[in-house]
Image (cartoon, rainbow, N blue to C red):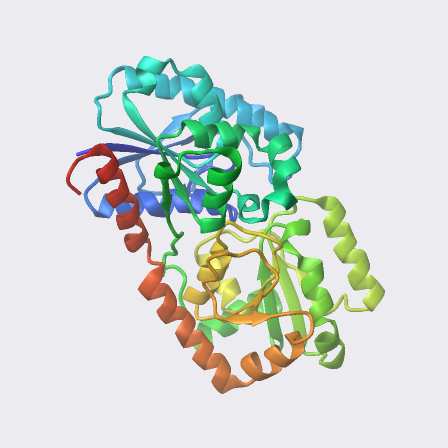
Length: 400
């Protein structure tokens, strides 16, 4: 049997306290691998306030001042990532000295793997399989659009891809860019989906929904929800623009959005725009909502969720909403290669789509049922974990 180490990114501790998609992936993948009888351990940033859990976690300590999560991608965040990556590499170096040839190190962050590659001597590096999942959404865009940004800001990820033994990609566009534009060996790549825990994300009873609506002050309202970090790529302002006429014509409609504020400037831009429209009472920022039970309750307050990102590697919030039985309205112009949902809109037909597919209760129920079935059939974590494990076994030449 192989020994698998799932490497936390150092962004926020696992279990994730904020809606940090990569940390959720590490947690849920580990749970499913454990249920399959695999020897798997999470290595993660130390956190004395880590939520109670039964996961096998080994801590990596960094100076206390840097230990708190920082969703704004400023200098403290970058220093934190670097310090964690150095400390992580030291810990992994000690492990590899005593490892056998069936050790897998599964990285999910370019900083972590980049510094590992710099600090670990080749004779130790050759004692393990280095797997890397590309969670960075920008790789799904056209090369002409991203070339300058990639070479300036993602040079570390380029090296990670070139030196990893096995690369998991969440969409074909990322694979093609890496092979054609930066000459990564095509034999390294495996296409993989993200999954969702359908026991956590599920439809609540009518009574439970009423309690959740009261909690958020949504009683008597038809809520359209957007979940995701607050910065330009996620497009909260674009969603408000499309919702504008529906909100103006229907005082009982609301647009709510949740997530960590990555860009204060963009959040201020949203606030100023909402104030200029006089829609302060119908547009509400509900803050960061913890993934799991709390986020599921929030999904269940909504008639539908809206997805308007410019680009994403996958779009975890889509399948979370679908699992909760809440239809997802997806912008056709988003670079979302896998497109797990089934209701798409553009600038000209948004109101028509909302009217016919969401406000019509029969159609909404149909979409809600289809969304849940889609998740159960295609995006369970057990299925995704089996896909990961199968490719690891092939690479390590052992039986699954």
